[in-house]
Length: 457
Ligand SMILES: Cc1cc2nc3c(=O)[nH]c(=O)nc-3n(C[C@H](O)[C@H](O)[C@H](O)COP(=O)(O)OP(=O)(O)OC[C@H]3O[C@@H](n4cnc5c(N)ncnc54)[C@H](O)[C@@H]3O)c2cc1C
Image (cartoon, rainbow, N blue to C red; front, side, top):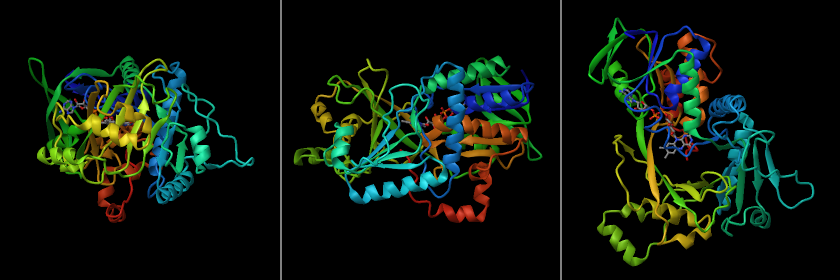
């Protein structure tokens, strides 16, 4: 194919979703999806695969985007016999700090106003509404919103594995996880069945004439190819800015390295039907004097400081699986993306320590953690932690990037929104919040300076 109506650069979950929605809305389009690697292999198969509609913040745009995305994922799960194993276990936000509990409650009220669902409080009163625990599998017929537990005895009864210091637990309900690879391959299969062509190719140049896209240049096995096109979608994940540079476009986007650890929880400390559980409190790890000296010698004084909240874990696999995933983004400096990822041999132990504050039973693995597997990738972010979806200043060029730590959960709605922009269809109300031209709108720019908590995990 030497001409295409649309070229999508990047077959991660974002580019694949764009191909799926474009081909669904206009099956006659000649769509070329390219990637320099295998589909989904760079970032989209390295995530925690979790989703949530709980996005407190300055406005309701993220809640609406995620609600739409989850609606679309549920539809696809129903029509495919839930081939990508979407569950609805929820997220548990946990704190031992009464002030943070208050902040979480305020955030819950805010998210409820935005459409995430109601706030229900549980003590031990007979007037409390019935709490419906999450089943291990499936997503049908369950509440949305958030169940709030503030009574220590009730917290201990419901969640006996949590630290006795816990003062508040928020069980956020329209959340869970799924197989991101399963979802992505299903979308790709359906897009290909509608005529989308996938090609292993590296985008190395873009021809722009008179302010419009004219062609792209590809490096392919055995040489170079030129493909004439009037439309290019930048879904290049960590290389989003590289493609923008080819277009002469500059957007405020940076990368953060995020790792995750998988290990065998042989002692079954984490219940197999547990939700995703997050420790919201900052902490300083209890290093011994000797360990402190060693860390100083290693140049790792970063681990001696107060580390931020946000350590989290979830069981991985079915009830028979021993695996647990653990994450703690305690180092989030902007970096240049590098592959393979730089190693950090201390990461598994540090995350385990951090999570022990929330789940004391994990202490049995201190110093003898079953061999962990570490992988991860880059969160590609804007300063306000919102995606970039929509037209770029070069005619025919579109952004589908900066999907940060929410690209799996947002993919369905993000691809749909991108397709609406490309096809000139009616846009949803939340479209302006994610359009790249938001930086040209004065109010939004003012807003950027005081964005506050972004609820990133
Ligand atoms: C540790 C970790 C945990 C995460 N947890 C979650 C989670 O629980 N829930 C969630 O929703 N999200 C999560 N995320 C975020 C999510 O994984 C990403 O937002 C998402 O995968 C981004 O998808 P993408 O398609 O934009 O990028 P990618 O998957 O990186 O795809 C981009 C593709 O573009 C290709 N490409 C780049 N440049 C070129 C070029 N010049 N020519 C050809 N091809 C090119 C690359 O090869 C790549 O395949 C997590 C991320 C990490 C790292």
